[in-house]
Length: 124
Image 1 (tube, one colour):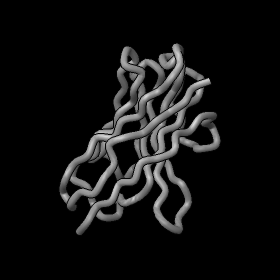
Image 2 (cartoon, rainbow, N blue to C red):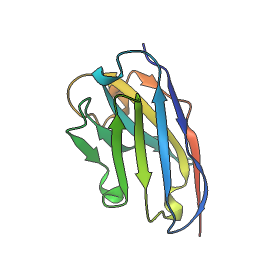
Image 3 (tube, rainbow, N blue to C red):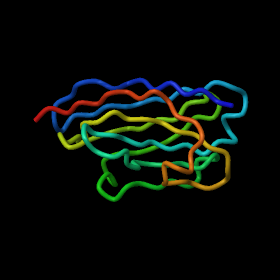
Image 4 (spheres, rainbow, N blue to C red):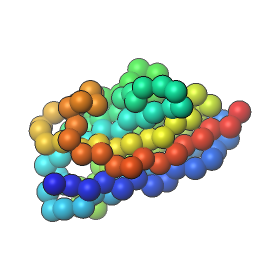
């Protein structure tokens, strides 16, 4: 089992940057594929980015390509989401998620473990 704690959210102006972190507990972080999802008020939770357990495979939702970058440091048991050129429509609670497996997974239903989320607010 793994516990996930997100951090790094906050209020930023449009065009600004944030780096979200998700720290995992346990000794087997390197066996988990990781993902970031977001949920805006009144909307469904949606996929943002995913990374395989080795970091060699990444996937992004089309609208965030070129603005968001997912990465991981298995030694630190942490996954990151670097967010650049932020837009107001990126305002949401951002969640990280984990599951076992060797691939990169884009569906929320495929994940077994979730963090509590961190709020990102982008002002115009």
